[in-house]
Image (tube, rainbow, N blue to C red):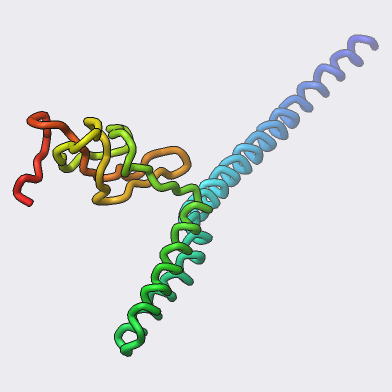
Length: 172
């Protein structure tokens, strides 16, 4: 009788194994599907975040754009140009404040030593008096840094003594 009981246990165990394997396989398939769905959802969320990443910045800039539009309208309506100029200066200051809040800094240039990592020399002027070679004397276009990374170099004129000038402005 013991043999029959053991045989029954073995047979019963064999019948259970395929069912258990099937359940495990189904769980694995569900887990895989959940993983794929989560991956797709995260990718959609990422694309959505990228698409609207600048929304906060743009909302802040829109009020400044409105101020510039009002200033242009005022000029065309014949309002006092000095008052319009003051309004434009205020709008310009607001714009720079918004940029700073979003991690944008102005590259310092005039009066600084030329640094090819931050500046692009577009012309040289002859150094006068005690001016040192490579001193930035004029900024043609402002440069900007975003969160520590240069996004646009300053385009500058630098002082150079005598014939060592790389670019000359003798034509001016």
